[in-house]
Length: 264
View (tube, one colour):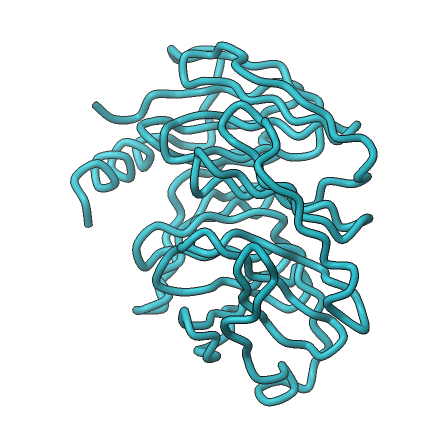
């Protein structure tokens, strides 16, 4: 485990249920939106109820703001590459590729890619595209021109359940396909099915090395998918979501996100 991640986990474990964000140093960012995410540089991305996107730097300053209203509901915001952001608008079956200031770099329409619906899409580690095709229940990888590179076997080859993923994440080693009612299915980078993790009810999650980090409504936990071990990092029943990136912990409590330095 890298030193920075080890220090972060060690410090996080000193927190407890009595944690109150206001009594510790850090920044406060007002937020009454749908969801938020973070990148590995410590930037915070806020997705509003009106589908607006706001970028807040790790020192609490707003650096960019945009709202692509014509595309409807913003389902997933992939900031794994801070300089090439993928925004998936499920209503219009469209992926917008944005730079770090939300200028459009490209538009990918998925309307003709399935006999069903594309329920989730994300950036591939090599700046291509992964998406879930509900028509043939496959995970498919393409380049930005939608030239097909890889596709999985149908999900029926390993499950009898009907999957409808809400988000996908590529961490360069594995692909994580999350259906909030079924769990997280793990594939390798060639779309070969590996296994399913029985963690349900998630809207968002993170992957660092061999661990999945997620907040289940009260507990911020890590799951080691190599050794099948769950650890509770932080318990807090007043949070809506918790993430960690860079050297910061991000806690969404009521109408505020608290940015806490946890290492360094």
